[in-house]
Length: 614
Image (cartoon, rainbow, N blue to C red; front, side, top):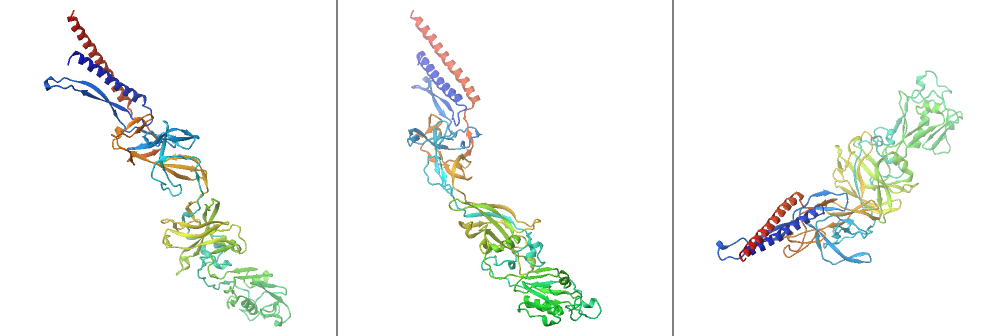
């Protein structure tokens, strides 16, 4: 070893520091490069052989690159929906295009890896980052969200078209009032289901409750008039002037009927005639039905009894008359003589509904019964559904309270749900269909039946469009019956899973690493899953142009999956620390200058040696 070895070592030092300067320069230049991983310089000494340690001298130096690929850069938000960053371990799988054929990129099939997530959609529907690498991933089924394979492919979303999906389920949550505010309830008789806001099957030509529900037998309903003026209230002999006058006080009136007066009971007309004797009175069933004005109130009430099937009664003390509906039909009474009929204690016209209902439940509301149905039901909301071809249909829902615990045991709060099948139904055409389920509630407002979280509505058809069987999902505590001041249903959720066909409008990447497409039908559907890979020897990957890396023997092959997670609308910046690089730059500059000083000194010593020869 000697002066010339010192010159050689100093030259090696210059080369090593130049190598370091080159790395520092590259790091600083790429301080703003997305996903860039800086390269540090590692120096190693080169020791010449020596026979003994005491004769060993310090050797030269060489420089090596030290990758920092495993060190993450800062993640920041981006306004581009297809930008993404990896938090933690992992790399995006990408391929570089080797050319184009028919305006479509051609690939070599070699997969590279990068953390530069500045991907954007190009004209062909590929996701390409700023360095020109094409993103790879696994496509997923847009309806189920399940992967369609497990081998990553170059993703392309050009003109994606999603077919229509028929409505197969409705998600529903609502609170039904304990007492619904229906139109009929304001005029209904107290103590009836209608009076509690419910549906009275007697008002329908077909019982619309659950198909096959045993009918509640019709029952008689009584209506009592006001106290009638009778002969007992006006002492004196009964004369011809007090017509329809029998024995006081219960069968005589102080008012007169005259010939030509009529009383119509359930459509049958009773005519008043004046023949001078009761011989002019005819029996019910004989046309016409006549009663002589000289006959008694009892005779008139007997005729009414023959029509309704139940005899009216008279309060012997007050003369108040009680009429009955019977079970055959609702009672309807009218008179063309307001004064005389008023003497009986009733207005000119009077109606009363029988109790109960007739007929087994049909589960349908026909056109003839639409008015009664609307009056005795409340809205349950509406949702737009779709058939298999994507045709939209308006699914209207209405609730009816078919039983009320307020009526006493064994009654319980029960509701029925209907959907509108034909908005234009008339006559015997079906307008609304009962879903076929009794919804019953406990006293605390919780649903007691059905016990599950969903029922199936069979064969749903709306305006001629078939949706098939539809699942009506209530979830946990989705349907309740709590008191409501408004008496209306409070709809918390009403959603369905169908949609029309649609074409892809835009794509975005979410935080689950899924490529989500927004379609013209308003649907946001998963299109692909971005796959991540990792390496056992991450820092031994071979760097490529454009922040990409290729596997080496030292890095090992790519391993599918990674512990890192994807952040959508984000970018990972360079991991270069400018302050650290400037510090290293100063050290490198000083070391480089020191090596030049060694060369100058060695040169002076050589010159001195050469001077000896002179």
